[in-house]
Amino acid sequence: MISIDYNKPVDRLENVLFEVQLEKLFASSGSAKGENAEGKELPDYRLVRNKKTGKVISVVSKNYKLISNKEALGMGIELFHQLYPDVNTDELIPFRIVAPQSLASVHIDLIHKDVNFNMLKQETWLPFIRVTNSYNRTYSLSFEVGFVKELCSNGVLFNKKTMRLKYNHERNRRITLKSDAEKIISFSKYFENQCNKLRQYELTADVMFPLLCRILKISMKIPDERFIPNKIKNLENLKHFTAVQTKSYGQTNGLNAYTAFNVATDLISHNDTYNVLPGYYFNVRSFFTRPTDWAEDFSNKITGTGFNLDEYLRPTIKGLNNFNEIAGFRWN
Image (cartoon, rainbow, N blue to C red; front, side):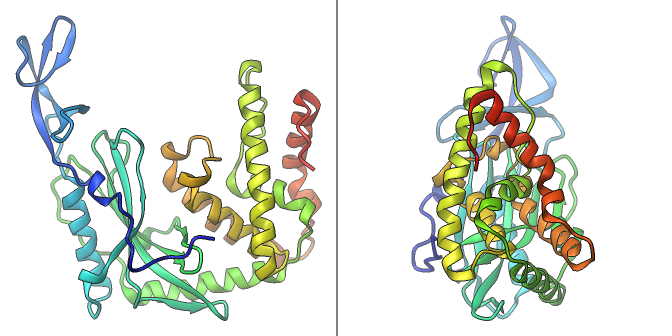
């Protein structure tokens, strides 16, 4: 478990706040080049260049509105102030940064130690704002509110419209906050009720791995033969970390669905360290919302009558057994 250290913000922030610029695009000898190139100008397109390294990040349309990561971060801080006007935004810290090696996109999570909700008895969760920006149109500029667990810095996001704002780089419109602190506080109670239901549903250790595969939406499709070794390696890594984290969280929470939720959020929140989730950087937001989507669905299922865990996990276990037959992957 990696707790939040308010006195030591992540040291990678400066790495993603580099200056960028738009340049005219020219076609020269069959390739597209920047403003110093000789050749025919392509008036409908622009280059986005990293001024620090000189590398070209992407090609965009002429209507593209360039917003730097530094500007986006400033907007995120302003939005946090609108949510919580009584806190000193100078005390905001970035506790997580997710970015690929190309630095073409970034997710920056901001928290404040004085804004928290004491949920689930002695557990402290804090709302955070995630600032997302990209220079290659991978992501829209967006701001969304999630929750992070103080003790282990596990973060979650929600597929709720009131928790997210999106901004199209090609539309020059002013960003306004659609949510407010009261709505977030109200939603935190809803989230708390879900987690309490999960805590009450006991599990056995042998179902934790297939359940984690279900929560994380790990594909059970058999890949092309040449990719099977990589698939098995990924499953082995995920099985190992599931076992380790289940033991850790189980000591505090016992073996129940809430422990599974914590293991999933830990793997997602710290994949930079674990590196067990293929395609993570192409689907960062999707991964962060998978545990909360599952928590809502699963808590509703176990509240009703007739729920059967064996039936619920049957498709996943069938897929894992197929990998066992094909490649000897002993998941249990």
